[in-house]
Length: 222
Image 1 (cartoon, rainbow, N blue to C red):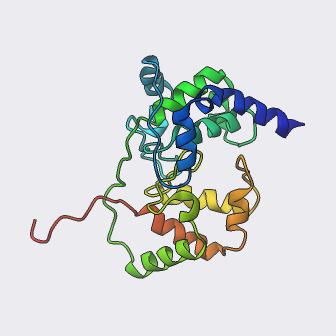
Image 2 (image 1 turned 90 degrees about the vertical axis):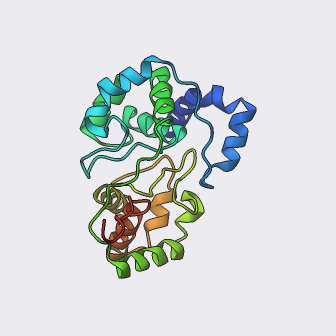
């Protein structure tokens, strides 16, 4: 009964979007890496994001803390789903649950739509990457078909998150939580996807994904 009620609540948050032809086209692109046009954002959500979210997630959506997820480049429906899961107690985080529980359906839509306007921010230039580990990570991502849902460039789409350039620590923690059954998504897709991946392989995949799109190193001699 709880899952049916939860589904109905989320459906009510997205009904207006789902009834539009543009939303139908966006749904066709979900998981392909294509990004749907951002929904119209009420002007006050810019200020509300700055007041409520920016301290942890960054004014531009790229957090400085490696355990706090990057929001820049994320998709509105994915952001909406996560806020919904926090509000309904289906995803555990004390700080986020407290924030989300105070949100109406309209608030969740407004914040999600604003988040979708934040363009991707490249990861800061890291120390020289381990070329062998990057190659193993790329091979594992192909082997386990990560791009099938997250897109060829891992930018996600609609209900599927952007994972390219996400913080390595956050990625690895999330992957481990899915594997250990400590985190449930809105569907069981990720639990099934990581079920046969070893912990060592998860580490390598997270290392690889976190460094995608990083700022290039300066040219020699500069």
